[in-house]
Image (tube, rainbow, N blue to C red):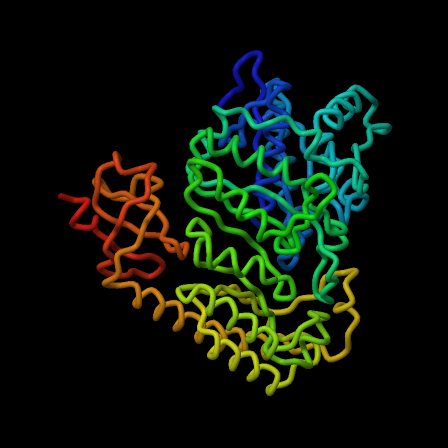
Length: 464
């Protein structure tokens, strides 16, 4: 075990789940940096460990309690060496089950939801004060409120040297929460109602990222295309935000996720038509191809409406590649409902997709529905769906062979003399080349595919 150097404090954050949690973890680190905490990749030397949790995956809370058991053992090892380790649980599981976490895991010093991490230094100070109390009186600091103040206003700007270390690509949260209340989803209960950051605040953070060397920004939101940021009393849509971000000198690529079909308005579709900076890859979940199941899910659109939206998007941007989410085995799903889902997959033709077996989430309407599907049926349906999607993904990768694509070279490759980056379609691309290529977009001829990536070579005009 590596011992912490004198007068330094080490912070280890384990991040579960979505890209928004990755962004949140970075901002937690930013919030603690002025108080002397430096990130570490070695959990064994950490003075403070934060678990930034996600409630989307099955048995999410039990995985957190299992991790806390391991951390207790590590904490005991550090104490035996005369050091200590404070432990906090953040994120959506903390928001949903804060009191239960504190009750079941006394090792935890802090429990706080996604709307409270700007108060992390204050919570940490209160938790440290609790350390001096008798064990029978010690209580975890819990903050799972939905405060009215804007947490982003209270967060310090990321230090430029820290931002540089985060690389050429960055996440930027512009919207949080959701008002859709899909019957399978916990987001409205853990992240709260839809809230959008003001336009000026988003632009300022984006400029700071670009000044630190970021070339590609992915805008984040639980329902990102519902963005309606304030601009001096006027609501700005995600489409207008994209136009404004495109004006930032040095920003070369722009993406966003995750979207809802009902919020793909004409302004956003026009932005895809007009802005080369906006990448031709869109994650647009449908969840099911059955209108009956979509209604039970409270998705507020039909399969035909989803397909019509896809048609408008592809008319504006013919080279658009689509990604989606699918849930199989939702309560009441019949064989025909499932066949309707396979049908919509065949009609769209996805470049990639995420698919899951339905599992109940306590507190959501879906948890109380009749007609729960047998586990073996869900497993068989998931296998068939993934087989179809995987074939489409393979075909999409193969369709890129022979094309020359702009690739943002981000890092050295796994093999000597190799570098890697991302295509406009978010595919990993590997090619032979010098590390001097890193940091810029290069034209790359795609010559082959591997299981999850493309193989390329520097285009002749650039290689000469």
